[in-house]
Image 1 (tube, helix red, strand yellow):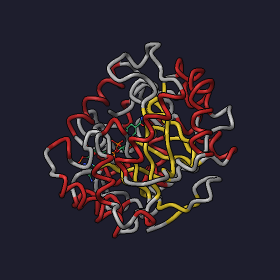
Image 2 (cartoon, protein in one colour; image 1 turned 30 degrees about the vertical axis):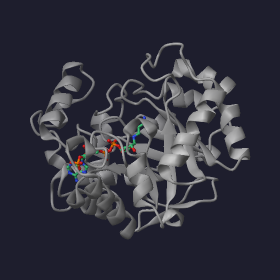
Image 3 (cartoon, protein in one colour; image 1 turned 180 degrees about the horizontal axis):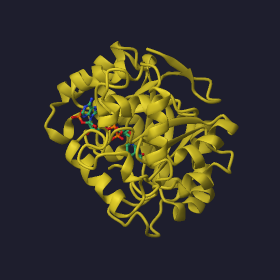
Length: 318
Ligand SMILES: NC(=O)c1ccc[n+]([C@@H]2O[C@H](COP(=O)([O-])OP(=O)(O)OC[C@H]3O[C@@H](n4cnc5c(N)ncnc54)[C@H](OP(=O)(O)O)[C@@H]3O)[C@@H](O)[C@H]2O)c1
């Protein structure tokens, strides 16, 4: 497995990271047993993945904790906590105090079976919550680090609605963050303009989510989203066929599937350190880890993608 230097964290990580959330949640969303989800984690580790991402909100921390028993030193553990009281509106004002946030982290440690989390993220932060993070939660994260309970400070955006990276654009003006997680994919590559130049300039480790999601793994969802973009006049439809928009990528010298093209597209983007892949299928896992180690898409394909989707910043691909 290819590895990269993870910003200024001092860590070396695999270019592929295993995501335990998204629509799949290690297959828990569609009936995988705990044993099957653990088998996915073990297979990923055995194939050289040393970065595992989870979150309180996914309900997969106990599964990750069980899977890494006796193998804790083989992985970089990344987890997240939401910053508001559960059951209240995420855009509401009921945001957690630093003290409550710190108390909650004890659960993450317990469920993961570790005494130190490598990367703890504030999960899915909206732009209008960011000031609170700076005032209340960053000091809490610093205390957790002083106590040896976390190693790196991270923050993730709510890409489903913050498709133009408003929150992260702002967060990256500060110097607190060791790690950020951003949405980036073939149909919304706007992080290329707003996030990745800053993370590279500041040497902040960067995780990519939404590489594939639904829009690039399910042909019906693909056609639907492309039609929406076309109807809103956001893409040049003379460059593609509406029903099968990515046919131009499916050629022997380009890619053998849309998901392959989608992961390779992200993998070679300057500033993209770890590409998260979320799956509950061993076949998908093997396929994805293979394609994440393949060369970049040919320049001609990249140019065409840039021409069609280069200015899109209003969809996530969810
Ligand atoms: N705001 C946040 O903090 C946030 C938000 C979203 C995600 N994340 C993190 O990012 C990780 C990646 O999330 P993502 O959902 O964006 O992952 P993704 O890898 O872009 O997409 C995963 C989806 O694609 C399917 N899939 C994967 N490989 C496939 C293949 N080869 N062929 C066909 N379908 C395939 C999966 O279903 P199968 O199970 O059927 O393979 C799953 O539904 C998450 O697990 C989570 O850790 C964080």
